[in-house]
Amino acid sequence: MELEGQISFLEAELQRLILEWERYFAGDRRVPPQIERQQFAHRLRVLAERGAGTHALRFRLQQLQHKFSTYYALWERQLREREEGRTAGGSGPYRRVPDTPEPVSVNGDEALYERYVRAKRRLGQDVGLDRATFVQRLEGQRRRLQNGSGRSVQFDVVVEGDKVKLAARGATRNGNGE
Image (cartoon, rainbow, N blue to C red):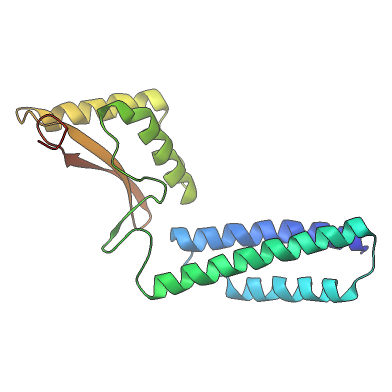
């Protein structure tokens, strides 16, 4: 296989490796893909040691090495944090979806749906609900929970094991902390 073909192959392999690590950190895979990572590192090292090629091919190879090095450091950091119990979601069986800074209020159903979809896709699951149905069901749930309490209800996307759920949280009477 010529150098350009080998570089293209390794670029595709790196994308697959990235997906495998994402699956591991999402909980879809029980064991980290360490062997696959070592095999990729070996292939990349052998190709880099062979050298030669045009400037453009050497540049692509250097970019690939840099990208792999960056992901390698990220994966090591995430593994270390997981081993030390400092995962992004805190403690307990529930963990917040990483890109959800705060619970979404009554007016944020569209954004909540987007985060719900992202969480389901991260776990490789089918969403099964369109946006309109999701918002309609959420509003019904909100009405049931608010019935008689006079308090607003906020929802948040949480991941429990391999399930994506919506957690309801009671807010204050006026929603301003009073």
